Amino acid sequence: MRVLVTGAKGQLGTDLQQQLSEGGCSLGQVHLRVRGAKVVGIDLEELDLTDKYAVKEYLRSGSFDVVFNCAAYTNVDGCESHREDAYRVNAMAPLFLAEACEKTETQLVHVSTDYVFPGTEETPRTEFDLPSPVSVYGKTKYAGEMFVRENCSRYFIVRTAWLYGCGKNFVKTILRVAKEKGKVTVVNDQFGNPTSSVDLAYHLLKIADGAPYGLYHATNNGVCSWYDFAKEFVALAGVDAEVLPCSSDEYPTPTKRPAYSALDNLALRATVGDEFRSWQEAIREYIDLLKKEGTI
Ligand SMILES: NC(=O)c1ccc[n+]([C@@H]2O[C@H](COP(=O)([O-])OP(=O)(O)OC[C@H]3O[C@@H](n4cnc5c(N)ncnc54)[C@H](OP(=O)(O)O)[C@@H]3O)[C@@H](O)[C@H]2O)c1
Image (cartoon, rainbow, N blue to C red; front, top):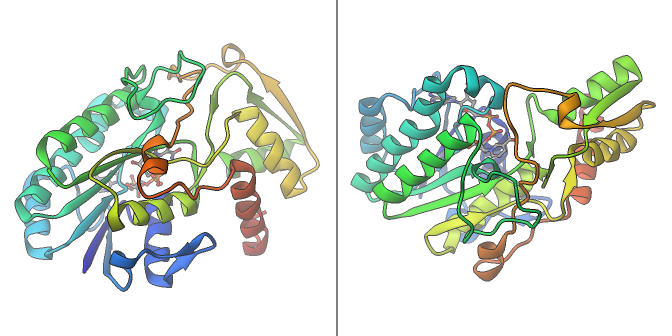
């Protein structure tokens, strides 16, 4: 079996490749069908996914069985000021991958976001709920989902949320500010599911191993605000700093973010099973890892 991972240098792409090469993670072993797969990881330097003909040729000559598309324009505020770039990466690139996968009879696992929802309801959204994104990021990611669905018959679309792993992310930024300033202010009126890229990678492999084609939500269990999340990991990291709550109005950003974007992993539970840990367990493991690496 040959597996292609795009966005290979990103948070999720890194963990996917690691689990494929190491045979698993703390949650368990890599699933049967993808076990022992030959893995090719690529990022922007190797292939610009917005180049239709390059994508077509790469997939044609690569003879892959499964493509995991972890590449995206993930800078949510940057999307507002670079709409066209965001559309190219988050919508057109998935279209080109979907067309190429259809032609080569390859399965496509495409990753999307909780930001496809407006965040106006206060219960976790299931796969049956209709998206209505409010940000450019959410709109372009939703366009990408539709292109995948309409152009590839062997597709899995997996929506996740509030991801943290290698590289830059919310957890590392807050810890740095907390350490430097002794206090940090975090919004307390946006709710979601913090999700470990380790746990997500494990579930993507599980989905590719034998779930029915279709749409899945995949996040760690439990809902909290950014403030609750920050308070938990600052304490776990042993940083002596005050974590203070504020409202979104007090911390304006270029992007309107959903107030409540939590997801319910309904389809996952009903098919291959939901082995996600609580967000508290997952962040504990991540903080332990950062300590071991000497990052904090
Ligand atoms: N991060 C989150 O909180 C979050 C939340 C919900 C859903 N998601 C989704 O989860 C997936 C993985 O996210 P992540 O946080 O792992 O992303 P990430 O760390 O930002 O990695 C994305 C990778 O894609 C690459 N890329 C960008 N444009 C490309 C292009 N034209 N061609 C090829 N590669 C390109 C990026 O390269 P450069 O760095 O050089 O641009 C980067 O290495 C994405 O689909 C994202 O939308 C993320």
